Amino acid sequence: MTVKELETRCEAVEQEIVSVKLEIALLHQRFDEQQKQIESLHVTLKTFMAQTIGGSPSQSNSLLTGETLIRKGKEVAEDVPANNNEAQGNDRNRFKKVEMPIFGGEELEAWIFRAERYFEIQKLTDEEKMIVAIISFDGIALAWYRYTDNREKHQDWNDLKGRLREVSIRRKREDNARSSYR
Image 1 (cartoon, helix red, strand yellow):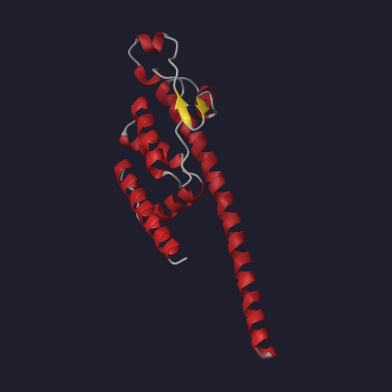
Image 2: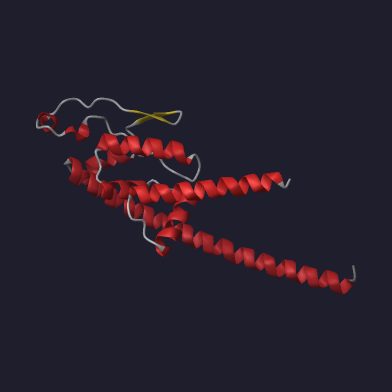
C-alpha cells in the first residue's frame, strides 16, 4: 500500500469517527427526550390509575413503584384486604398492585403472556391496554415503537402484538442467517 492510499484510508476512518460521534450525540439527545416522555407518561399513568381505582395520584404511586412482589422475574399477587370499595363490587382491586412487566426487546412471547395476564387481572379496556403496554417499553423496544408509531399509528393491542411478532420473527431469521455465515 502506498502512502497516499494510507492517507486516504486514514481520512476515511477519521470521517467515519466524526460520523459515529455525531450519531452518539444524537442518540444521547433522543435518550434524554425519551426519558422526559417516560416521566410524563408515568405521571399520566399515575393520574389515570388514581382516577380508575379511586384515590389520589400520590396513592397510585405505590402501584407503580414496587409494592408488588417480584422475585426471579415472576409476579406474585396477593389478595387485598376487603374494604368498602370491594364490598360495592369493585373487583379491580382483587389483587394487590400487580406491576406491568417491562419490555426491552427480548423474550417477546413471555412478555406478551405476562402482559395479557396483567390486562386480565386489571380488566383493562383496549385503549388502556395500549397505554400501559407503551409505558412498559424500554430500550430498543421503546425506540422501535416511537419509530413505527411515527410512520403508522398502532391501531390497538392486537395490532401492536402482531407487529412486535413480525419484527421478532424477522430478527430471528436475520440472526440465523448471520450465524450460518460464520
